[in-house]
Image 1 (cartoon, one colour):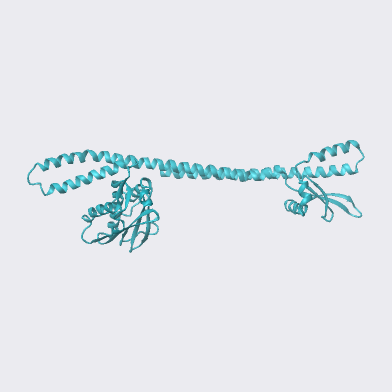
Image 2: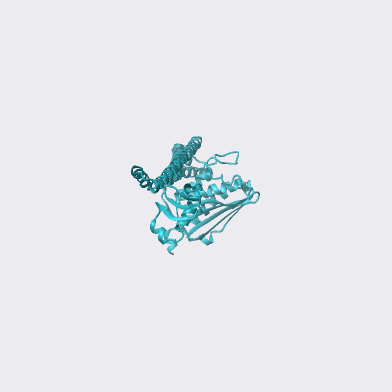
Length: 392
């Protein structure tokens, strides 16, 4: 699926480049042809003007007049042999010529930049007198030159929209895959968990099992919780207002029993003991559990895990910090990617699912606040506070 996505994206980029290159080349070719044709038209117009002034043949004058009046697109400015403007011009805004000082001079400079080789009409040889005709781009030529830019914008928009659609489809397919996998896992767990519950009831009726039954019951309850968590993936969970401190304390007490005696846990709930947040408790517990498990792996069974929480900017901010080995700079942007792991065991799904739970289901954020090799890592959870808290 990922390879297919990259192939499609590469193909779209190549198509966009081919279309853009072809458009530019062809537009330049058309612009060159139009420019050459316009120069011929200006030369014909100049010759028509000379004929009108000098010819005595009525037919020639009529033809020249027709040629002269047909040019209603190409702007022209006439100068003398010294490049002084004579006052004659064609296809320019008369109001601007009269009311805007220096308008003709500015246009003449513009025409010289466009085509510094004027068409010359010699009036006399001795003394030498001539009119020079400088001309600019017609509206058609401007539109032709502008066309590739418009085309490039259209191609760029098409490519962006296509890539966004492919990304959306890819993410949608990925989400469906995750949801299907999670629900299938919940379904598969359901049968053995139900069976274990039945066996537990049988054990309760058998003397001598009083010590082991509570521990087995805890593990069965744990399996029920895991099944419930997987069952909630892919569907919008119901959020309930809960005391966030109690929720963290509960999962922390559970993890302490499985951490070993050389792990020090720090957790100060005093600042948020009365604060409620809208949560799906089973899914939120999963997030905290995953972060603590990652911290335990990072410290390799010996070190400090510190959890702090406070409110700021209408948000609940929870930091889970360890004193472990840290995350390298090359991996820090990959830790939330599905399947990424630096462990010898594991699927690399914990942090990816945790981020999905926090950001998609709780409209919050899960990020790495900081990480430094051989000093530790701090994961930060940001959750929005409910309106009732904001108004308090």
